[in-house]
Image 1 (cartoon, rainbow, N blue to C red):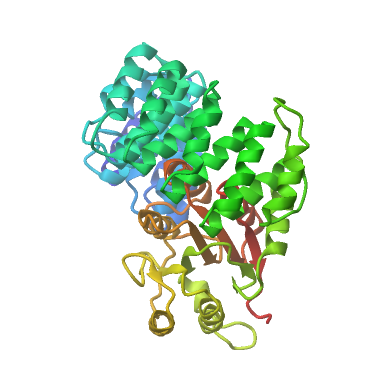
Image 2 (cartoon, helix red, strand yellow):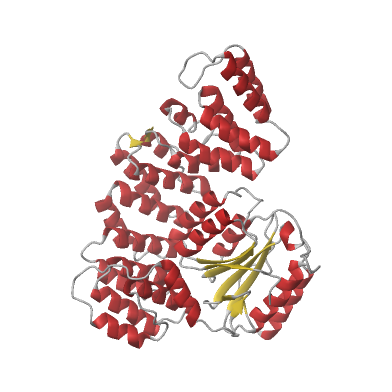
Length: 512
């Protein structure tokens, strides 16, 4: 497909072509464009990726159509480059082409998904009614990404047309009995387009059977802070589902008053799930600047001294809160230097090339990880639920869902992991999505070199954004353990971890 498009574009360019401003290309620019177009079909992905970025900078109809065509590229790095480059598009007419066969209407699913997300990156206005008409009542990943794009466009003042009509289409999705994740995303988008209506729907969703809908309602309440937010957040913080309780205490934190802080302390005292207790501590530390941990008594003394009615300011940075968390964790319960702050955890392992490349002393990283994992799993209380998910280009879960850490199960899992010798590209995005499907899991602990290379997405900026969107209605904490990661990549992993309430550390596997 890309080859055919390049051929057509090259013929146009050689015949004169049109530049970014609509003028005929000069000979020099035409030659430069032809070189980029040819590079866009090079056999090497890195060459194609570089060409896509240069074509987006070059501009003009022919150049942008080649960028659109690259959304179909089977190599994730090339497709991701095209997807992110669309944020530079400044031509409203060309932007609309992403609603047709070049994007949302493509026969290729990966093009539909990429275009649906990329539309939210546009810096030009686009017809919101047309986007809303493209939504399907059947739901699915494409529609969820498109709803998120509508939300982002509205937030940036780029959604054109009748906002009321767009809101009505979103409300249909919010009320649908089908895809509850999509319904929750639609509720979040409505908070941007029609806040008053979103509040009414959020109150209804508080009693919905779907945890995703209740999580979305908590987000809307915490964002818009209506007069009844405190009472509803209290109810959410005592929900039967731990994921909803997590969003409930975050809603209390967003309210940010003496009463809401006391409510978080009360939840800390009665919460059965370890990760939710640590999340409460995290929020209290960030607001107070104090380093108390799981004991609710000093927190209660602090909260009782707060002034009535005043919205509080943050007192501790996320980095300092993470350090305080780590200081309070049990050293016996840890993996590769990271304390485990959860009793419902999925361990993810990057089985790409770096896991199998011998170190300077001749040892293979996988063998060292085997030993460290044994120490971690054997230290888990038997009440803990866990899963192991190594990943190459395809994730390889130990079990379809979390298993209790009984001694026999732990030994079985360790033997399975020791024998697992798969090699290939590292598809972290799909591995994380698999962990998020299991409602029992509240924490992901991933060991990686930090550079995803497989699956649909390998660009960390995209992966961070996509997982954070997914985590809005399906809360999960992502802790990351990085081995020999480039500095820029470390920054992105740290952002992903901190914004989900987790921690990110760098380790040297050669050290004890």
